Image (cartoon, rainbow, N blue to C red; front, side, top):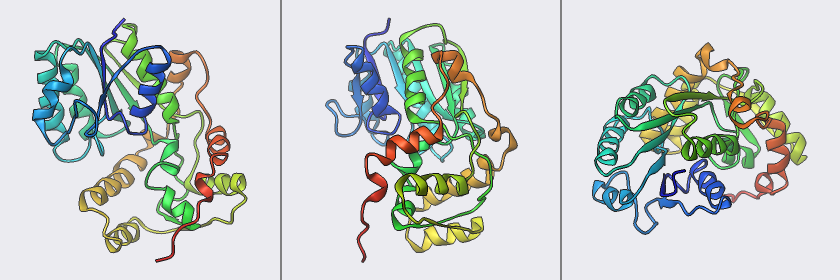
Length: 279
């Protein structure tokens, strides 16, 4: 059992859930975020040492994604420092079908530490806690690749798999690819949320070029635009990423959460019925 656990990205979609699940097991993970004490900031390596002191195992998420420029160098530096400071195991969250992310994975694999790589497909929570929320609130959703089948996976399931890997050695040396239990398109996502919220959500299919231009007009940061364009053009378009895995069943002994169950639970929070301000 690893008791001294660091969660880097502890306020993110999966990191916050990993923290909660560890706390539910009466463990006290160290919070790896800029506002924690000690703080952890990817852009400030001086903060890494204090965060790593006395740590046995760690869950690592890189924001915004392992595919972005600079991620490989950051993971390389963190991995080297972690090993030097006596960390025994790293569980790394990676993206399914991302070549650049796989380069980061290999750094961990070849580090000499125990490891588990968790490769996940797109999160359900992108619709309620991330970049797809604002369009849902506006009632106007415009996206490319409207009919592309995507095996959306729930962040709760990702976190539960990560916790199993953190606390046990059974999955040491494994690369675990996890997806949701079904394929669902953007059109189907919007229809499902509309039905659960009793809202009239309008979906329009646009080209990827139009989507990028729209983000540019909204002055979305260039690095985020690059990431979204990359994910649409290289990840979602890859047929290998449209395959359902059943690894969650094998790791957790139960079926993965369905998108419909996620929508039903999330709709009850009212997050999709907030009023948007008119500027």
